[in-house]
Image (cartoon, rainbow, N blue to C red):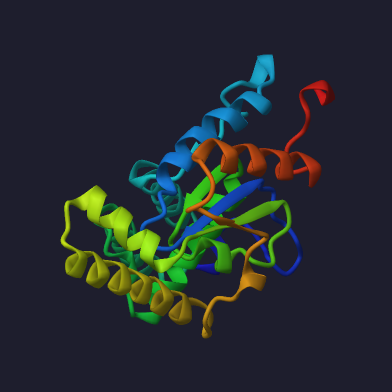
Length: 232
C-alpha cells in the first residue's frame, strides 16, 4: 500500500496544499468546508488552468474517485498484495460513504485509510473534514490543521435544536460522538490528540462561520499556502 499512496512523508515529497477541519460534536464543519472551497478556488483562479486550480471539500464522491485511482495504479503495478489492497481500499471507501469510518479497528484497513488520506492531500487543494486527517497529516508541510471547539453546554443546546432532541438525548449524543472520534484518533496515532496537533483552534460558540472562514483564508495567505490575488 505504501507504494501507491503517491507521497513520502519522510522525504517531503508532498505537493498539497490541504486544509483539515477537526471538530467537536455540535460544531458544523461541513458548511464551512463547502464555502471555504469556493473562496479558495477564487484565490487560486488562473484563467488558463481553472480546473487545476479548483479547491474541493472531500465528500464520498471524492473518496470514491481517489480510491479508484489507487486501484488502477495497483492494477498496473507489480504488487504481491494486489487483491488484498483492492479489498482494503473498497472497505475504506464504503466506510467513508456510510459514515462508519470511526468504527474501523482492523490495522490493515487503518493503514489503507491513512494511505487514502495522504493521497487526498497529495492531490492538493483539498479540504478534509474529520476522519482524523489533521493528526494523520500533522507533520506535513503546506497544510493548515483547523479545530472547531465549543463549551459542552452550548453544544448540547445546539444539538437539541438541530436534531429536535431532548436534553438527555443531546447529552448522550454529544458524549458518544466525542468519545467515538477520540477513540478513533487513538487507534490512528496511538495517543490522544492534543492542541499541538492543530495549527489553529476556533471557539465555534463565539464566532460566525464567515468570521472563521475569513480568519482561515488570512492565515493561509500569511503562511503562503495560498497566494494573494496580486501574486498571479
